[in-house]
Image 1 (cartoon, one colour):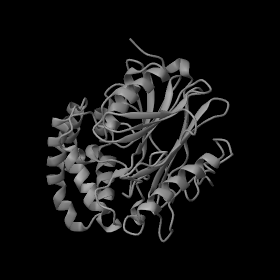
Image 2 (cartoon, helix red, strand yellow):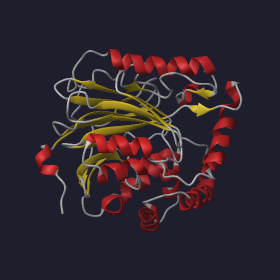
Image 3 (cartoon, helix red, strand yellow):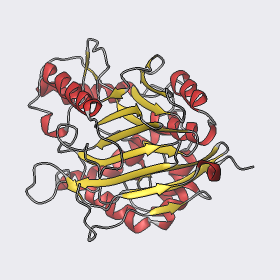
Image 4 (cartoon, helix red, strand yellow):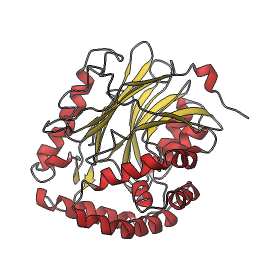
Length: 362
């Protein structure tokens, strides 16, 4: 990837005191711009639905086992515009990850979401909890964690799990998305992104994080990819709401179970929503996962691994993380002009924090 100096720099915000609430206060202008860019994905009339969607999400999060409810309430009140609750109840569409052993375990990851602005408004939040510090690739107003590196402890990322299908035809895919959302309404478990933040705040080791991510009931199926500091400390944890399957070999993931199970269907990028059939969705996820696993380069080579099929129309973030060395590199992507695949819209941001400087504080 050619580094263009005229591209904007990704902000690194030190919110070790105040966390996501302080992040929203410091970046309220950016939070508003992010909300407006994301809404441009929808028909203009959809903007009028945001307060209603906020209300539904707020009621669901209050019913669920949400540990950061007070954070969301404070952020929504502080920013003073609709969309904060909806942001914290939404879920990324698709991703591709791979954990591999080199000089130490490394985690490579793209985050794919159809909404514009997520790459352009990307930030890094430097946070901490009782177990130590961590860096989260995130946005102002979002309280959970999707992609993070905790120096000296572990790196971790979330992929969306496959979709439970009640129908078969691709044109009824959105019907199943809605049906699953309704089914989630009765679930009282913690949202996966908020569980991940808890784990980063409180788990001191890879093994402790692995056990928590395996055993804690979650509100929605999810795939976690975890990489520690010692060679061999890497795994993929495939989660249903109360069950799990963990593998320590073939540690890559996209948006399907490694062993496909009926009636689950792999997630597809937005441009494939009505064109990709059941088997095509499975093949798309497998192709992305295998392509990243087959890349034989080394991190730090200007994100040379971010090419199709890993790179797709919904790619918004690429990240390279090594907790053993305290390194996190990220870059934001967006669709630009008439290009068919996203292009970098930020400079590569590299954070290096020696693990000894990020230990737990009293």
